[in-house]
Image (cartoon, rainbow, N blue to C red):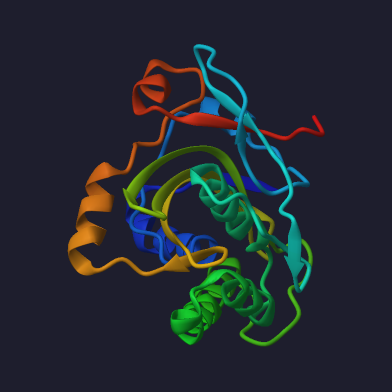
Amino acid sequence: MTRVSLRSTLVLVAVAVLAAVTVGAVSLHRDPPDATRAASADGTRAGVRAISAEATPHASLLTGTRHVDGLPTGFAHDEVGAVATAVAVTRAQIGFDPDQAAAVAAAYADPAERVAYEDRARAAVADRRAQAGVGATEPPPPPASYAATPLAYTVHEVAPELYAVHLLSWITLTSTTAEIKDHLYVGTQLLRWSGDWRLITPAADLRRDLAEQQPPTAASGSDAFTRAGWVLIEDVNR
């Protein structure tokens, strides 16, 4: 089994991976120190509740109050609920099934943008399959796999009931030849409250602003991590 870290020449590939995780993400920051690899860990609950004001703030993970097609929804009507929704979206984007990806997009997207999000999700899975060497329609053979793990977040209010959530996540893509490509990325989701938190696509000017505000990738516990204001995400089951 071969493990490689993605280089700058693979930025377009990484962006395609990102789109599958955070449909509507603003941009990508790349290539942290290898020490950050140890931070990756799957959780079983989606959502965030801030619980600490320690030197490295952290948050515990909670579930939503409702489910749509098995996906957690109904998070709190506040900025924490917006973060929780972004975490749920990211964790739900796994594997190589375009129908599953479209279902995730449909569950969380604003109804007015549902079809566009579904189309983007399917296209992102097609790109992901190509990167892993999986055929367009064939079942993914072992050991091909894909997973995204949210590790930390920052959040700010854009307008009343409109939040931008920046997620620092760990991506692992395993190809059909057992080559593992893993890296950190930062993606931004824009979420608006309309009875629940919904993903929306930012206008061009806001998209530029959000890209400028994105924190950089950084190893947890580092000075850069602290300066960026990242809040670690903890699983309450750990």
